[in-house]
Length: 259
Image (cartoon, rainbow, N blue to C red; front, side, top):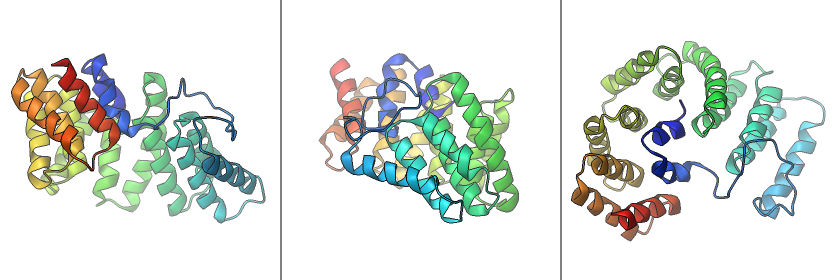
């Protein structure tokens, strides 16, 4: 289950919560799309960059292809063309056994998995990302970011507790590890354990009172626990703050309007 799907399981109305992770444009589906300068969803500058990168990758293979492919895949992610991002990783990055290629491929495939709303595609991308992350863990066994991501791909398997235990181990080693705390909080939302989710997000906010992502999730969890007034205070704080991702602010505003 992808990070987006975790939130969706808590209720369809929570879709807006994770819009900040998605492109700032509307994408009707995840099918590969031709990127053209007249496409309203892609800026002229980015469209030109995408075209240039595709031409460079069409040339003779060399070490620079890793950088070109990484850049191209990230442009695709930016605009929500997840299939194209995955194809780019498969075509160029997964054919290179270097550490830099593995790290880049893991980033791209994990991002595509995390943003997948389609369960089947999310599972496929999780499997691909997990294969690379397991290799990277052998190379860098102490890397907490790698273990964090690997854990979230394990949650999609028939033994999700293996992933949850791995996240708990990360927190045991680093109690302030934000990514692990966020993931555990989201998994608590998924399972309806909103009290546990509240605890996770409060820990994050104790360390960083301006973490508006955690603040939004905390408010959502409190709403589910009928702690309406506490949630409204958080949503109002988000709406009134200046340096906030527009989608997070829009999500908070929507909750205020509904209650």
